[in-house]
Length: 320
Image 1 (cartoon, rainbow, N blue to C red):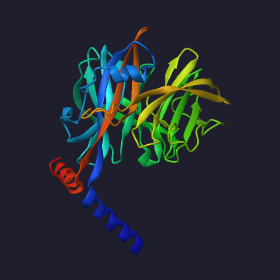
Image 2: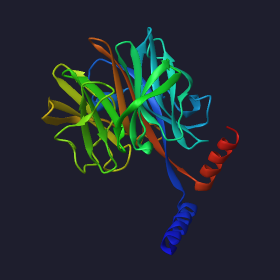
Image 3: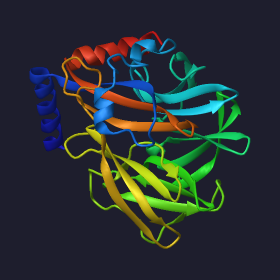
Image 4: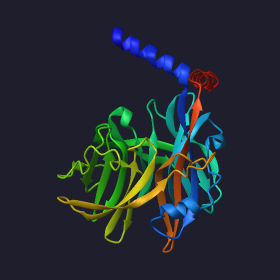
C-alpha cells in the first residue's frame, strides 16, 4: 500500500514537472476511385482541413472526434463516430449528415451509456439498421438496433462475453464473422449463422497472438469478390501510429489464411497538420463500381498542463 502511494506521488510530480501529452483526433471524408487507398495517394491528397473536428460538436464539449463509420439511408449519408465528452470523460456516439458525401453537418449525440463507447460500426440487415459499438468496459459486445433512425437506439442483445476491442462484423460465404482485438494483443475470430447468435469462436482463434502491430481492428472489413480486406491498427510504436491492410485468402469454419498487403495510412509529420502524428481508422462505402466514399481519422500530440486539462474537464462537467 505504501509503495502504491509513493508511486502515485511520483506520477503527480512527473505531471507537474513535465506535463502530459494528449491526442487530438479529427475526421476527414473524401471520394476515392480504388478499393484500397494507397499511402502515397492519401499523403498527397489535399486534406489540410479535417471534415469534422471537436469544434464542430455543438451539444457537448468535445475533446476530440474519431472512429467514423458511414451508411447511406433514404438518399442521404450518415456518419457515426465517437465524441470524447469532456464532462463525462467517456466516449459517446454522435452523427453527422451529408447529401453528397462532401459537405457534412454535425447533428447530435445519439447514444450515451454509463460506460465508454467508441468504434460505432453501423450496418443494415434487410430493412433494419444495427450498430455494434465498442463496449469493452462492460466486458461484453453489445448489439444495438435503431428504434428511430438515426437518433434513438435500443440494446438488442449481447453477442459476446469478454473485453473485446473494436469488434468488426462482416457477412461472407453465407455466414457472419466478427473480428475482435484484446488488450493482450490478440485477434479473435467468431462465426454465426444469425446476427443474434449463437456466436462460436473459430478453431484457429486467436488468429493473431501477442502482436501489437496487427491485432487490433482498424475499420470495417471490405468484401471484394472472393477476398476480404482487413484493416488493422499498427500500435507498435504508440497507439494511433498507422493502419495496415491484410487480404484474407482463406476463410471457412475450419481455416483462416491472410497476407499483408501494405501500410495504407500513417502520420504526415507535417507541422500543425491535424494528422501529423498518426492515423488509426478507415471506413469505406461503395457508391458505384468505380467510386468509394472513405472516412478516416488522424491525430496530433499536444503537450498540456495536467492541472489545466483536469480543470477544463471539471468546468465542462459543472456546466453540462
